[in-house]
Image (cartoon, rainbow, N blue to C red; front, top):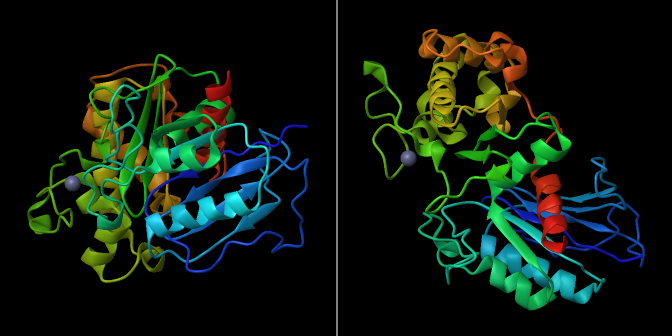
Length: 324
Ligand code: ZN
């Protein structure tokens, strides 16, 4: 049996300790199928299983985040020191990043404010270490793919996946293909309309009133003085947050005409938000768009179907497609 490695690097993450197998008592064996690694802003997961589509992972290790290139290098060293017959790797990286295989910057992180990552040739580093096909896309496109293949967008060719957490980002699938264009969509930074009391609240270093700067987890914490998780009972917080996300969904409907919008990320753990966002989306659309999908808003704007594993499953699918 061939051992495979799949991976997904999403957003900033670092590990401050060595990665070691068997934390949960499991040993690495020749028949093990590595499913991937998935780096978030604050955590690192390494995941291993024997089944490509098995969303229940037997091995999950978590490290504290400090430095992303440091993390990538530790992961590579770990892989190098724990050799297995890797067949292909899939990486989903935070943006802005180059996803055009014809560009010499393909697989590199571009003008990110995360300085340690700027210019880092992420894909090339893993391809050089592992010597196998390494497929590469944005973290949110990969998560969109995960939902399209394994989650709540199965059978749909037009869908949008949005993560609302440390940042805001959207992966877009149009006619069955992940959308890139000249770079890739950066819908998390779309301009949104603000209320007078919100003037000067945007925490994005590049924009005066963008969605990420007003509705991400750090934006919520900056505005209300506490992290979102401690504000669950404050209706005012979620009414405002739902308004921004409603503007976003209305814009996504108007621009991409998706058949479903999946909202994930840490902020969406506040499940009361879904109902508010659905209502606000319809208000902002103003009956201008009328489709059967929009008549069933509970299905149209929904939570991820992969239980948080949409990124890593999408990365696995990206790797599988690289071998096809
Ligand atoms: Zn912005």
